[in-house]
Length: 315
Ligand SMILES: C[S@@+](CC[C@H](N)C(=O)[O-])C[C@H]1O[C@@H](n2cnc3c(N)ncnc32)[C@H](O)[C@@H]1O
Image (tube, rainbow, N blue to C red):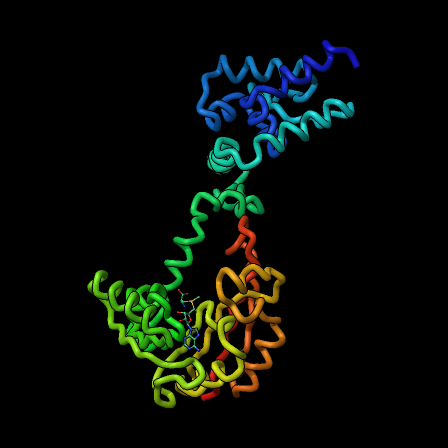
């Protein structure tokens, strides 16, 4: 392969606008005007890029009435194919090509003569496009507004009251329990600073919760089970203090081998197997057990997977 040949490949595909054009033409045959609308560029610029791509045999055009329609031609030479794969990877996740796909859907819908609606045109690409709204935290926050106001929740092992405050912010009445007075003091300070929320702090042990039978609608323990001698007695207590039809929600690590957590975080268990938690929940008389594993919540850190376990007390 000559140096000149290589230079031509890199010159052609090393330009991000040309890669954007190819990605569009790979999806749809387009007129120059349509490319101009999608890219927001003048005709002279779009035509110049198309000329270079046609010269490299990466696009082909045909006439349709007064229009020239352009489409992508998959390269059959290995070097071009590899370079195209590389160029595609290089722009993956860039905002410009993602926005182009949205603009493309709009342009295709505007053609009208094909009877496309915006969503007909988008079709299976929607999941990529919806990233525009894809703020996971925002979605989670929005979903929490489905919580019925006035729900009474026991936050078992509340720590410094972070989740108790969030629940109170959603209109829940929270009974926040912890065995550590230092943690409860910190929670009391934080709650006072926040100056809002219906939160009652109670000192007590997860194995003997300071709550009446059926006193709450839901009991919730976030990263607490791993600190207990065994999870079963606390789960049985949570089942006792919820009303019939109420829920228990547990969040903790799945079984792992990060022994450093024992020294540095004081945990007693290196997570739990889903079967172990399921057996404890059903053993406590709960039904509708559901356990989801969440890898993304801890992605990037040397942290194990988390799980969210839910179960319900029969009516
Ligand atoms: C990792 S912290 C989690 C705090 C809080 N749930 C959060 O997510 O921010 C664990 C908490 O469990 C509490 N805890 C440990 N053993 C407990 C027990 N037997 N009964 C009640 N609380 C306990 C600790 O005092 C600590 O506040």
